[in-house]
Amino acid sequence: MRPETRLLYEEPLVPGRSPETNRNSPPRVAYFYAAPMAYFYAALDMFGQQLRAGLAAAGVDASHVISSDRPTTLAFVKLQDGQASYSFFDENSAGRMVKAGQMPDLSAQVSALYFGGISLACQPGAEAYAALLAREGTTRAVMIDPNVRPAFINDAARYRARLNRMMAAADIIKISDEDLDWIVPSDLSLAQKAKSLLAPGPSLVILTKGRDGATGYLGGGDEVHVPSQRVTVVDTVGAGDTFNAGVLAALSDCGALDKGAIASLGPQKLARVLEFGAKVAAVTVARAGANPPWANEL
Image (cartoon, rainbow, N blue to C red; front, top):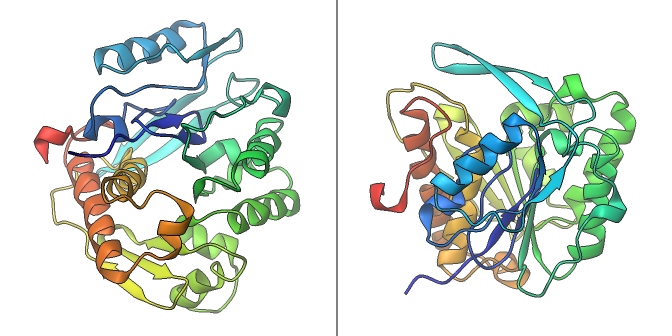
């Protein structure tokens, strides 16, 4: 029987022991399992209600969603040959304006934490999420996908310092080639840059390069590359989120979603994890909308 995995997503994702969903997109890891639960700060406006309705339609338990009078973050997407560009409206939003004192005390059921996206760039939320990681991340598996959005970064030095602290506390860093060049601005190769992120403490760095696939770099020196699956690209929105969800789901499925197991991960198991991430991401990009696959489609 597949192990139960709880993934609690806000804008950082807070996974525990049964699947959950993401604040800004349709359910992802939840699609691969049953009885998912959602956790995030949701606005009471019409967009927040749409998020709740989408969760309910997907069979996601939203009983842990916290309501906020602030507005929902909005992202407008322009597609050009299937490639997405974004315009965000996030000022004073429910997710952005959360403070450290509003972060929950996590129960022992919560076994992993995920952080990423614009929530790591905007104040006061960014510091709140960093504080949550510092408080709760020492005994839980931690995954970070910086997903750098330079337009949101008002103080690059402060952002870099905070992000470097958070990445040093992570077990897994998933990073695109573009983000890696921004975070490590040097003449080093992408492989050398990725390996440099292992030095402060992470056990695994996953470098994604779109159609050129993904490479995992383990702390022990092993490297694993998996190709992307060849599909006709319709819409890239949600591809990275789906890949991340696939990685987390695959790690959980093989009993490796904890600090010790990630630190001792071998090349063969990592290959299976990356292949599953690539597989579910390929389904998402092959159809319109941020629409990840259900388990019965895999």
